[in-house]
Image (tube, rainbow, N blue to C red; front, side):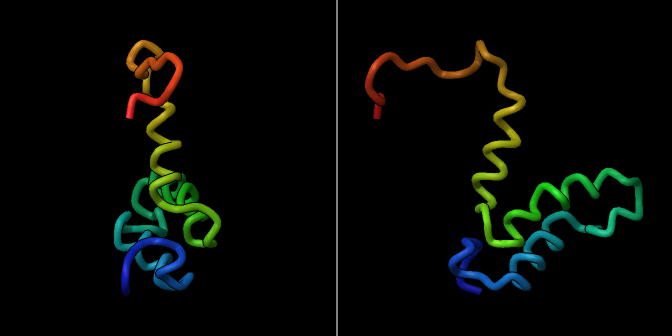
Length: 76
């Protein structure tokens, strides 16, 4: 496998990447894994990259006061 990007993987490879990353993807142990597995379904289906899914997930946990504030142009 060349990488983790959608363009570099097949659906089966993406499924395996998610399974290997999450461990017990069937969620039989405690029920908490089901939500995580569903979260990555768009990656498995080839609609959204892992990076984008993770960024969206983490963005929910950033307090307004912690967000960088830029005025005008990008500081980069």
